[in-house]
Image (cartoon, rainbow, N blue to C red; front, side, top):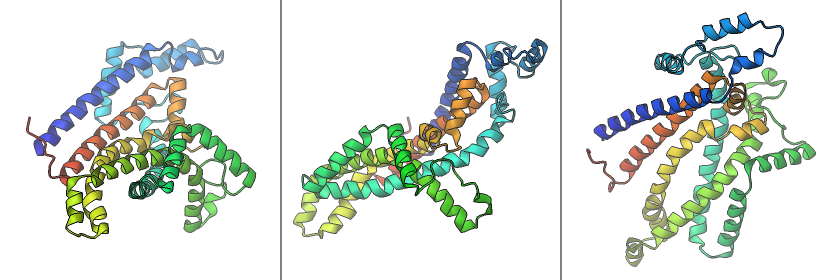
Length: 323
């Protein structure tokens, strides 16, 4: 296992270098840069723009720019934001927690609801409740998230029971710690529901299929023939094997903690990495895009590695050979 983990970590580092190089090349392959917009401003002289380009190294060849950025990134320095005029690490650090709160709430809600619903649907296979749940699930993950977000925002605007956007109310600073928590929870309701609904529907269908497949196995039939209680058969023997394939999905869900909420953040005015990334791409703020994408890629690769390790620990049949 140690050899496997070390090998995977080396692969992760190589992939991150490759992803960063491709992203850097794509940002430079598109025409123009951030300072082209400043050239349209008659109050900014060409000498000022040239001085800024030299300050940020944009007058150097592409490979020199990338090598300089990569060396600084290895030391934890991700450059300077042209648009916001602050260090990239400070900019992303301020938004990272907001995105994590929203995505983590969605992740918890998804798994808390989807797993029990999937088990219940499998145990009530082909009954009215199972068919109704299947219909609702297909409708949920067929509905675009942005459309659902706008629909919920419109409904809330008519009822006036929840905030229409943002992360905090105007009087947030003056509230008690309990009031702040309640205010944050109210602002989380709409984006969390929108983010979770499609994932709940998809994960519930996967759990249902896994559970049905396991319940048809011979060892389940043998356990019933021995007279074991049905609850023990389902929750001790069947559930463990049905849940194992979902561990891999959990690794992919970790990357969604930072990247999956981008569109919903923009629609719901949530101050996270989604709106930051959109602004950075539109303004060609290269170093913000690089740091954001590198962070998401690292979380995805490390999440998959952790899922593989957890799966090997949970299932004794899985062993990673030293190859």
